[in-house]
Length: 229
Image 1 (cartoon, rainbow, N blue to C red):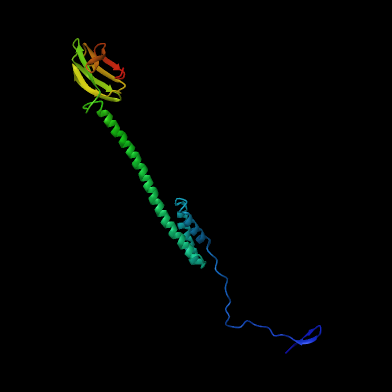
Image 2 (image 1 turned 135 degrees about the horizontal axis):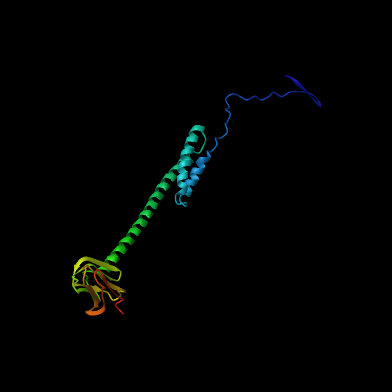
């Protein structure tokens, strides 16, 4: 026993308390991987960002799993959770946007088909064989002074145009035209070196316009306004 001098005399010194064997030293808790936390947060926010952050959640999750395996850090559960959420939401949003895109394409195609159908129905009401019409329009052409043929005959009812080539004279074509037809016209070109061509438009049997070409290879042209005029 040893003695230690104090202010009031000597007293025996107290023995130390050494670390007893069998008591382990507690290591500090492992750090949480930051990318694992980010992956989970981005995966959760994928619901409100239309899937844009879900792809980042997948990338961060894969990187975090590799870092955790290498550094023995914490956060594996969060990384896997972010991965799962990221893949699920990314897949769902890809399917959603694919359906939206397909719907837009189908809508555009439908509009084009509808326009084509409307044009076809309008054509059926104006040129050629028609189910019904408000007025009967007749296009006529005849040769005078030796003209017997036309190089081409072109006529229109509204926006629908028809053309025939190598036509023998006299020529006549009758079609049905609706009341709201805005314009009608007839062009006939003389194909002979002599004579001239007379052309006319009749509506319901009554001649409304008539003209004559100016000689060989000349063009006879007549036009009229709407049927209501």
